[in-house]
Length: 556
Image (cartoon, rainbow, N blue to C red; front, side, top):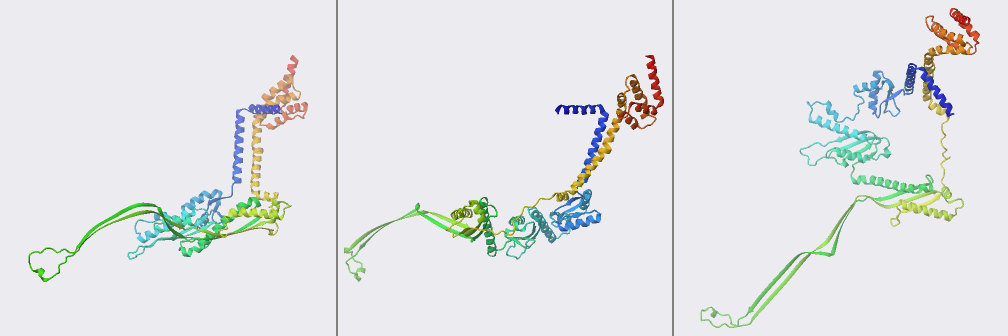
């Protein structure tokens, strides 16, 4: 097989090389033209009728764009969501240029470009302040719309007015209204509050309120007293869902999804606690100061025996002192005071989170599935042991604590099926698949038909026309030899046909080239009939050939 394939490949190469460079070049050009025509046809037939012009548009922009396109006579379409405009494939570029000339799409959330439309003259301070606030609102709305799941946003900012006689300083506040794709799963409200508060000078996070278009308050700056109940409910729901998720992740590999249900109720303590504690260490004392007081005293007492009279006032000669009772006293005191520094530890704890007061967990298990895991011959003791094992797993996953007073119940019951079990969705049939892909199939068939027509009526006749002259010139001698006209007469006839008849067929006489081709290529006719056709075609030429042949034979 390999040898036959090699021979065939060599024959193909020989045939191609025999055509010549000119014919090969023309065949290559024709092939490229066919490929280009087929490719362009496939492209234009398979492209969509409508192309996206703009997406994620507001309803106001969709209305304005529709009016502008209608005035310009450009057909358009809007998708089911109402936020995308479609135009014909060939008119998209022109439609965009037209809308750009009219300033569309034009969002309502204009930012700092508002100042571009204002002149520097004739603006009051009030107008400048209003424009500044509008610009900040527009810029914040644009930024918020870039968040995930946010389709539209509107920001309202209230700036404080300065007052000369106002004692208390007012703070700016803001409100944000958003339209989300999934309001239940939206969790960026706090991020929006911080974004707005950090963008406005002097604004606190508590002064920013976020709500959605359904009127649901997503985040607010209410006081802690009024916001405490809603905050507590939200935290308890979050903790309950977290515990349920832990239980589900634990039991799913063991029982399978749908064979158990869990319910968790969490009771939390969200009171803010501020605890201060001072601890003294009497053994770790350090001498800080020492004070020493030393006091010394001495006193004496002497009493005379003479009586006090008036004679004592008369100046007389001094008499000898009369000695009476005499006593003396000496006193000394020393006092020392030492002050010590005792180690003191002060601890202040502020708790602003939550504590779990109690958890109530209930888990029901499909008894049928439990028996399947244990086997058909499972005993009640084995079922009880399996439930006890599952209870330990649930307690570990939920963070069960007996000292806290948590409750945990695990039981196995027969699950009630909600109607018939869900049957697998049947795959689409051949007819439905054909209808879904009918447009693609029609385009593919159209391209295929165009390609076949181009090859049959374009490429094949061109190749035949290129190869016809060579076949006509080279086929005469072959056919004459096959017809039995060999030898000298055959050679003479071949030369005459090549030089004479071929020129008459393709030259000035204007005869049909297909006649000689049919004559020389016909294998079913006899040599006599072929010779008769040659004589009928050109009697003079045939007679000349016969005379020449007779003279050559007589001379021999």
